[in-house]
Length: 198
Image (cartoon, rainbow, N blue to C red; front, side):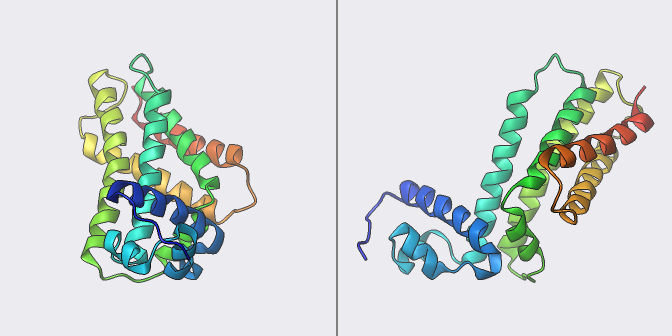
């Protein structure tokens, strides 16, 4: 098989793109680095130069996806929107993401025990990205007097928990559509908003 000699950034982009495809097609457990070598036309040594193992590679694919979802949200919201509508837009987007083909691989990954501290740090960073997005909306809502209370951290945790719980519930119903998942997430956040809106 012909091997490519690429710049580091270019190699990473190629590896991540093919890894995403592989994880979608095979799931986390069945995807192998050997198959990724075939897809990328790179040696194992090259793959392991950029990513120390399959877990690190998968978490980078997942981080990239979460960043893309966050970027989509930033593209659809504007500063004229109320904080309430921003939260509903976020809930809609996260609900639609339940239809993402990476979900099967995510479900497999979470059942795989890991003691890798780097992996745990990466997962924490991903969770923080979502939490901080929510927290910024909540803080603005408190300042604009849209939401009750002054504890943005606690309110943000409540929203984050409800979105995470909704996603878990939706994963147990794989036959629904993106519209169904989005509607479920939006209804969940609307219920929470009834309790915190002024």
